[in-house]
Image (cartoon, rainbow, N blue to C red; front, side, top):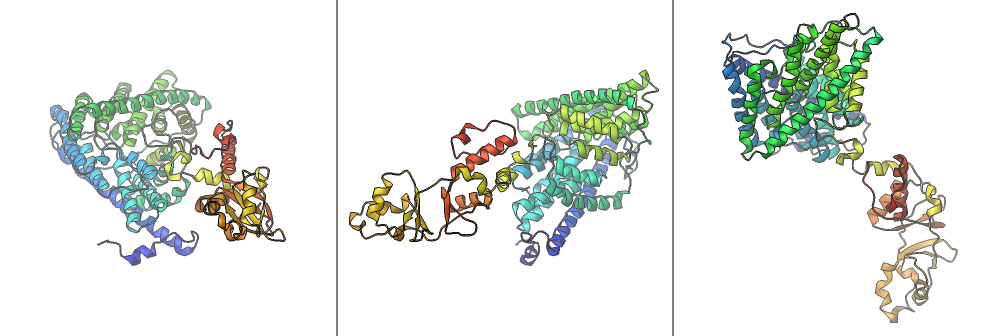
Length: 619
């Protein structure tokens, strides 16, 4: 039996007028509920991670990775003696357990969960199986707290998105409404666990596309849900930002030179990261063993890197905090950047479960800190605070690998509570975005909404709605009308001398009275005894589908498709019985093709020029 009774489903029936206060109130309730569940999910996941770090990394291996300043451990250190050999095999054990869980109950939960939510938005009508968030939560907590390298945004994105999808499905809402609720849940979860509500909302709207495009219809829903999720999370774990940064300032335009160098370094680093990540992923796909065991192999390789460089295991946020404070040495920063690329590729590329935003922040922060340290040593008066480059590097690197410049700038500002580096962040992030268009860590992104299956046909509608029938006046066909009292025998003589397919009928005063096509007269053509008895009026359909010069072409095209007709009479706006001509479906499609070509600055396609009915897919 459905847990949502019919009355509740009826209450949330949102397909009516969108701007009534009842509809607004119902939407608001849904977004608050999504934010509440996302916040609770973030609390649960964070708690599982803290418990896992205490009992696995700390309790068994004796290693507790440094935490960011805004995050205090729930349990005290165990004081277990540090053992590198256990640290070597612990990620493999975690990978074995998480791999068994994922590939037994929800194989789609493998890898980084944000891509799964993006795929569901574009290609699956916003549907995420109910078990996926549960499996993703457990598997990710095990992977990350046994030393696997990954982030939190993937699991929590699927928790929030999964609940939004589940709620919309149970309430039997439309596909569009389910997609909106999925995105709202994704933004709420990410905004809560990173304590960045504005960035969470922007991220949900921006991460869906690889070009500079936003899903505007999810921005406000995700914003409401994200604020609620953030408040719920902070009520338990305290307010404030994830990192604590000094009061960095930008007051020297010459410093943009080093920041320009930083952008180039981040793009190169991002390219290496993406290619390494998917290169490892491709290799593991070809290994001829069951998928259940592949994360264990990836975990062992991760442990081998962590044996020499433990800072590359698990979340790794401690190195970012050290870099912001200016206490991380250059070699350590470079080692963490390279090592984190390797461990994240091994952990998640092998099929392990975790996010990619967290490792990107660490890699970018480490590269930024390294560049800042070098310039500080060379030009101490120009670059006075290397930590500022850590902050900008965090934003620029994730922009390079995710194509989300706007939300990432806000993310880093909210995570560090530092808003005085927006100018260099803007320059670095936009440069990184421009120079990294050929690669992305999110494979399921599409270029823009016109390439998304979720918006299939919207460009067609948008273009045709801009134009009226009168804009195609030169392409309307003059047709021969038929007197409604004409005998069919005389009509046979007429059709032998014309290529016309549709025949409007008129009365004695020349007013439009009906219409028929050649298909309508086939049965009479083979009945000679009826030719003198039948009049054209007996064949014509008096219920005429017409259009007028002021009607938009999208409405006209709907009439073509709904009634499956190829020609439609054009009549005067003030007199529906006065025929002006006939408009064909092929001409409308050819007109659309030409307008799209003009929109993109291209030559009209040959198919459009010859009147073909093939419509090119929206670009």
